[in-house]
Length: 287
Image (cartoon, rainbow, N blue to C red; front, side, top):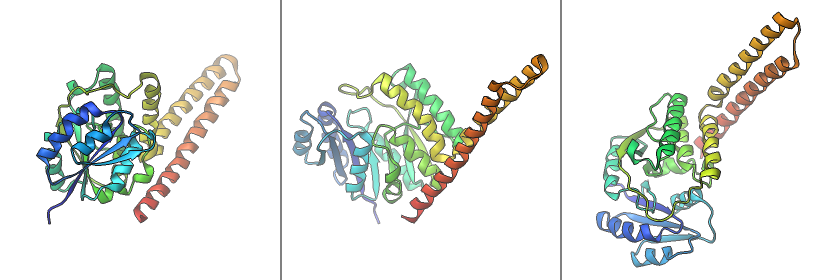
C-alpha cells in the first residue's frame, strides 16, 4: 500500500519564503498534505497559505518552533511526516532522497547540512561539537544533530511528542529519543540555501540555549555516561590536591573535601537522572 506524506512547516513571519516555497511544493508533490503552522505571525503568512490552498493552523500567539512542530504532527494525517523550514533554506527537491532512505527500512532520515552550508563559522564549530558529543553518547555516527529538515514514521514520531520542548531544540530531543528507543536513523547530505527574511536566532540568548543542548543530549540518552566522566575528573582533582596538601602541609583541606563531595554529588545526580530517563522511556513504550 502506498504511504501518504504530510509536509509540515513551522512559520513565524516567513511570508517571503512561503511565497516561493508553497507553489513549488504544490507542483512537486500534488498528492501530499501540506501543513503550515502559523506561530503567531504578524505578516501575510495566513493569506499566502490560503492563496496556495494549503492547510494552515494558526497559534493565537508565538508558542515556539517546537510547539509548532508538535501542533503539525498532531494534525497531520500522513503515514510519513516531513519537516522543513519555511524560510526557503531547505530544498523541496531533496525530499525524495529522504523518502528513499525511509523505504530502505529506517524510522527517521535527517537531511545533514554539508560544512559550507552552515550559517557562519561559529555555527559550524558548535554543530560539529554537538555531533561529536552525540556520536560518543549514542555509539552511532550523528551527522547533523540540529537539522530541522527530516522525514519520519508518523506513529513513531508521535510517541515522543511529550518530550519535545517548545523552543528550537526539538531536533536534538527527537534524535536522541529515537536512538534511546532503539529506532533506526540515517542521514542524507544536502546543500541548504541562505534563508529569506530575518533570522529568529538571537546570539546571546540562543548561545546559552545551545550550551543547555549539551546537557539535554546526555539526559535524553544516558545521563550517567555524561555525568560519570565529570564526577571522576573532579574526584581525581580532589585526590591530587589532597596529595599535594598532605605532602607539603600534612593536612586535609576544605578544598579537597569540597571537591570530593562535589564528585560524589555529580555521580548521584547522574545515577538518579539515569533512573528518571528509564522511567520516561518506559512510559513512551506503553503509549
